[in-house]
Length: 196
Picture 1 (cartoon, rainbow, N blue to C red):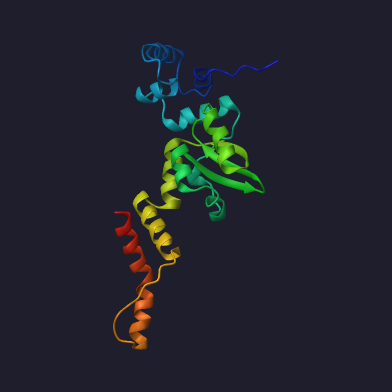
Picture 2: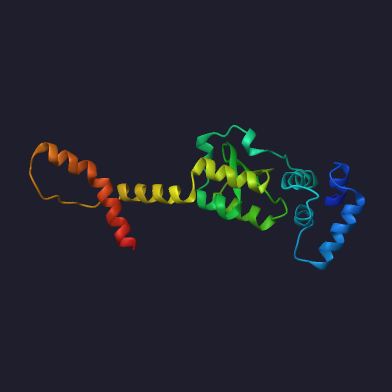
């Protein structure tokens, strides 16, 4: 027999975040705007914050709740998932143990995303729940800003590209050494021009 999930409003009441009257008012507002989730409505109304809603969702779905700012993350684990995947799915890798990967997600009801991750990463997945804002801040903290990340990727791609560059000028050893040092920069500029 399948056990039915406790309702989010009931969990928030038990957590003493909202009252029964506030739940009823939010449910009424949800009926008027069927596309919105109850948690989104409560946040918009200023009754609850994102962390409180996320914590209630974690409790509702039986997942641990974490604040990523308080978790020590291993740099090797962070590299397990590319930035683009983290941003697309609003996730962040927390722990790895063999083929098991623990990932912070913000919406435990997004089963499509969870299945998709298992397929993309070819790993057994464990989930912890974290507020969406925490995940986005952690992505930026560990991967850098989007602009810096794109620049770093372009530079890495340019230095990996095997392009023969001939430099005209003196055959002086010092000048030759300076031109060798410029090669990654030249490759980067050539890559940028080629992409334009």
